[in-house]
Image (cartoon, rainbow, N blue to C red; front, side, top):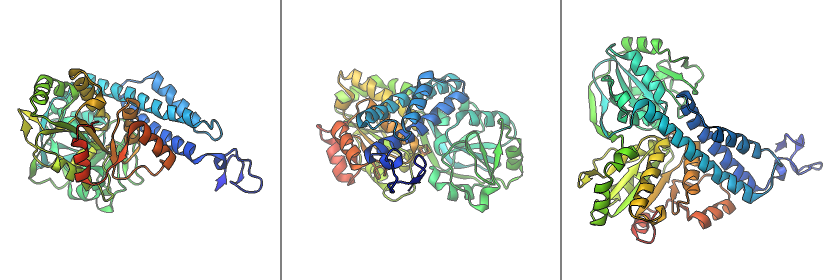
Length: 432
Ligand code: SF4
């Protein structure tokens, strides 16, 4: 390895051990964790800033965190552990800020039943996390006879009053980001990508793909300043979509909507009608092993409620889970940043039962894939949440020593066998 600090081969005869070669692998692991978390925090801060909000404390932390990862700044492991948990705290602040500005701008989400599939006629598909891009697209396409479909992380948009007031926001098409190649190929209209979870496109639909905001793909048209005119023209001239309805999906279970049911939920827990709550969600991915989440949700007993968020929801949201005394058994709180709602719900339940979050009959099973998932996991650890199951694999940048610390401090666990995990989570001793 070439060391840019010593300007020679790391570990060679003149190596001073002050550069990359001098780093302890555990410190390197925590620094990598920090860098991943800062990337996730930056994504949420970017969306909030687009909507006019920023937070000086979050910005200052990002500088501190990035500076702390320079070579030989600090060799103190415990200080890095503190910084990693502080990243979780800052991510909570930024998720709260993003939640608040979404609500301020687009209203408080309420439960929505969203048709899945397509309707006959011209259509545009929009994917990613940026609700402002969707809003601008809806305004510019109003009255033009074009149907707008959400994809992936844009599904929760249907819960927001100021977005769903547009009649031509007709439904959701497709699933999570890793299925883009098949799903975009089969969608005859143009597709707009608003954030980072984009796959390099196939030639078959590359000329129908558009990017905007932070995201860009070589050879794909990038839209500036929300000028969607070219996209709209293409939608009107592309072969129209056909009627292909595929049932419905539900979303919009923002914490305000769920806490509106708090009395019912508390009564159902007290009477034994609700035995346990599960959070099953997070970032989805293409690697094998993610059927774990589908199988787990299918096997969750009928007297349990499942909360979900992020694109991991598509592993579990295609089936009807029914309800318990009118409380839907599957509650989709929204995008990955809406894990903030899950935290608010958990804290409110803990208050209602006069206990800590770790004492609730609640288990968190988190699928991780990218940087935002790392930031969210750190938020949960910052809040002291224990017994989180993480899968389908543990992050490769976590060294055995760092993992030991996480296990000792937070009892974090890798996902394993579905039946064994489920049985352990339903045992009264193992909760959050
Ligand atoms: S939940 Fe994670 S993987 Fe999924 S679209 Fe959002 S950031 Fe990407």
